[in-house]
Length: 165
Image 1 (spheres, rainbow, N blue to C red):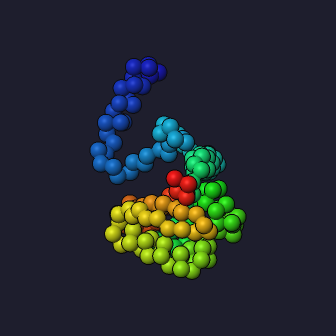
Image 2 (image 1 turned 90 degrees about the horizontal axis):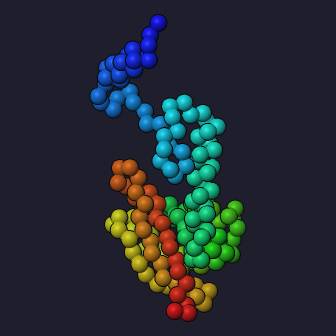
Image 3 (image 1 turned 180 degrees about the vertical axis):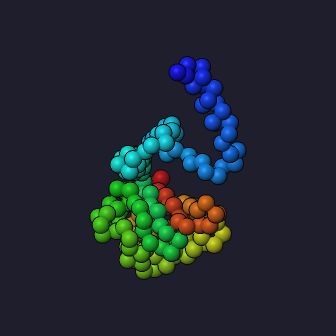
């Protein structure tokens, strides 16, 4: 019968015999925002739960601000918006998400903002500008969101009402 010391030695030998490259190794998913490993045997249900928790946390963060936060695809489709942005657009989540900017704001304003969005996509750098809509003056920051290959896939938008400032 193997002793605890024998088991430890065998475990070290198995570990040492594994390939040094990353081939064949899989990083265990981390739980929530802690970054702690969830272990090698994570069920689909556990992954779905962790994903829901992250989504809920992100929604909470986005809704914590009293300014508009939106995410547009590189071609101008609204992918995400916080509560304030939806309120300012006068739309529900269902009415806004998946719609093109042309369908959300007046045509001339959409044309100007889409030109800025395209500048961000082409240059891969943020732009800051001001404009007016519905009697309010807004300061906008459009920032690129990159994929793992360095391509701009989305544009994050932060719009601050500066009418009274």
